[in-house]
Amino acid sequence: MPYQSTVRGERFAFADLRELLAKANEEKSGDELAEIAAASQRERVAAKRALAEVTLAEILANPVIDPDNDEVSRLIVDSHDAAAFAELANLTVGEFREWLLDDATDEAKLHDVRWAITPEMAAAAAKLMSNKDLVLVAAKIRNVTRLRNTLGQRCVLAIRLQPNHPADDLGGILLSAVDGLLYGTGDAVIGVNPAIESVDTVASILHALDRLIGVSGAPTQHCCLAHITTQLAALERGAPIDLLFQSVAGTEAANASFGISLATLREGRERVLEHHQRRDVAWVGQNVMYFETGQGSALSADAHQGVDQLTCEARAYAVARAFDPLLVNTVVGFIGPEYLLDERQITRAGLEDHFMGKLLGLPMGCDVCYTNHAAADQNSVENLLVLLTAAGCNYFMGVPCGDDVMLSYQSTSYHDGAAMRKLFGLSPAPEFLAWLEQRGIFADGQLSLAEPASHPLLGQLESVLADSSAN
Image 1: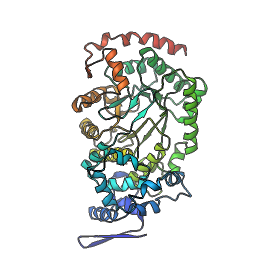
Image 2: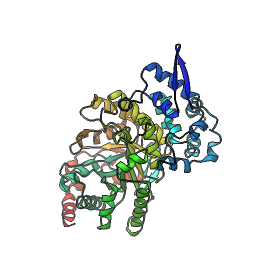
Image 3: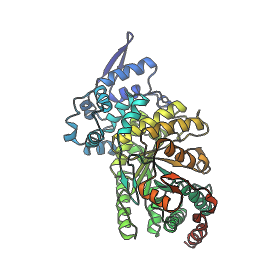
Image 4: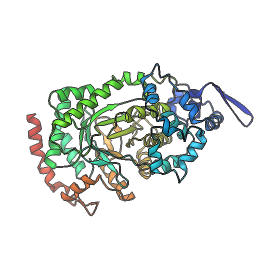
């Protein structure tokens, strides 16, 4: 159905909900590349005004992609909680925004309705919110998950330890990993992006990380961020898998471009759960999936089907939440300035993604990052890092010196995670904190190691490397 709105005497018309959502989005270079963005600020304001009057029931009744032609849309429809939606159905998007911001709408209420809120509803609300609004609502919500430890509680900030190496050298990976552990990072996961996508490489990395966790006693999980099929092939060869990783997107076609489907993810999760039952590990939970997303991924695959990149991103969260993940993060600036041009757009996208993921029930983290050809710098990273910490982000990346020498992009460092914990009075995951205190890395809840070069963990590296070489 068409929508209309007038701004200062100029009338604007929008053919359908998909166009209205696109035109109401904040300025994004990706939407401009797709030729679906508002042509002017007046048109953007007109679209926001019109969107504010649309009811949530109307959004539910008008999927932006036909469920008969897209399995992500079908998943959204089939998983919708109609009973919980009854109290929200007649709200307009503008009223929904006010309801979210209302102090009476607390965490318990938001948890009760998370399966009643579709990704398109979350995206619509985000388009009407300021950056402060996005922080305020997200800060209400804590989505807790468990595997070898417990993540996401209030007053907890976890860090993914990311010891990538440009040649997949196990010595370099393990040395960087131990360095990160000595800064108190790694409670979210010790996760390596392999430079070479091969079963042998992935299996070697998984064995090495598993040995490091076993020798150190650190209560955390490991992951090698290869394609899901490569990880499962390594599993068949006897490699241990704690977390099964995959990048996901918000349309069936985009996921197909990644070489996956919902069935692929479902089968992978079942196989890893079965694998866990055979391992002698003290699991504290069964959240075994790790997903990464990012605005622009569907467009970069020419699979966005006319849907704006913010709404596509929200739909990726529908895919993620169907598989009960331990970790989800938006790699917010990684895809490049073609999709998020500069610091302003990256900051906005990071806050939008975190808000939508939390609202839809996900344990959201963020890789606060940028590529070297974007109009951003380290101050850009630190600004967004502080905002997302205030918003209650579950975890960030811990990259040696903030410079990933394998992926060639800039992210957050071990020091950055330590600074956010100190600034906001936050702690690592509780099981991990107890281990840090026991090993003398933390004292009284604070990072305290005076001479990391002499810590026994470094002395244990040789035995880990020897064992890894044998495997």
